[in-house]
Image (cartoon, rainbow, N blue to C red):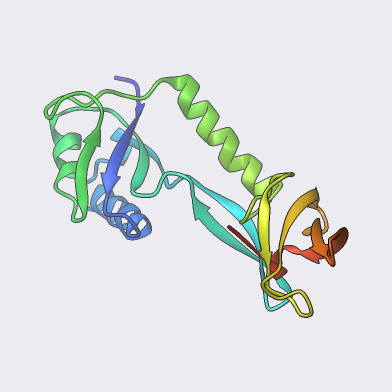
Length: 177
């Protein structure tokens, strides 16, 4: 039988501990040949905290884990009886449905893209209204005119004394409304 990809629903926020528990249970039960990869779909994001850029992880499917496995009664039971696993996604309660190979490829590509080219944690759109947190324009609202993701900066148009004035700000200096 060939290994297929399945989606497991786990308690949100505990995906890493569930993945670790699954790996340990697979090793203890000598079923390593029935299982392949266990993936928690995440991407690297750039966050600006206190003026410093930091990398962090963001799950793009919180509460879900992808597992490559040969589906049979023993493997199903091993996964299903793992603590903090709610069950499989898709199919019926007894026979889960594997996810299509095209979807798996898309998820793997997105994971790789997040590693190669981290995205900012907060995305801004031109024309979006934001609130400024930086002096001397604290609590002013403005419209985003331009976004520069490489420099984590944006140009915001603020109305001062009845005139629109463009201001260059960093992502951390504004809040989305």
